[in-house]
Image (cartoon, rainbow over all chains, first blue to last red; front, side):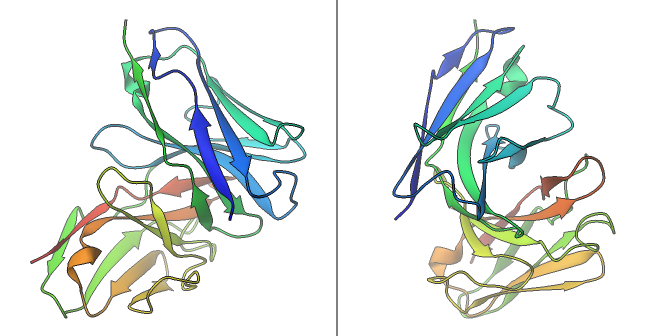
Length: 120
Length: 112
């Protein structure tokens, strides 16, 4: 059974770069059937799609975050990563990594989520 | 990029049916059959309940169903149970800018 696990610092200072990694276990990140992505949820608020990456390296970002976001994939480690630069308190959220079907809207596997707080 | 519009809250008694709406535009909900619905209990990750408008993943109760008419998608839960109390989010592919995805603001379902 495929599982996703987020890892990274839980506290980031304002203006610095948030970096998270998602490790895929129980399956290959190199499958042509899926995209891999990041979704976040500020405290008490709704879900926000950050971006997605295909195993080939093709990326798609939320236009509102595009200037600050980089998503990359490391197929040798079965991992993909998120970098969000110039963070502010508004970037405080639970960050989820997730798998989405290629040619489908379904996000069928989610990580447990990791809380990232932006504070000095 | 605007979120899809959902009611903030809905409620129903055990055994009843409820429907949650998700309104978008012809650039998202109305233009593509890529609407999904997610259930989220407090402190937990979202769970996929419906995908591609009306498909149910294996393991999801057939009390959950999805549909779409024009720019509005709907999630119907029949035979409400206490454990259905949760937040529900819709999501859709959108072509409004670079290809990407958008979520609704979420609906809190209360089982009375």
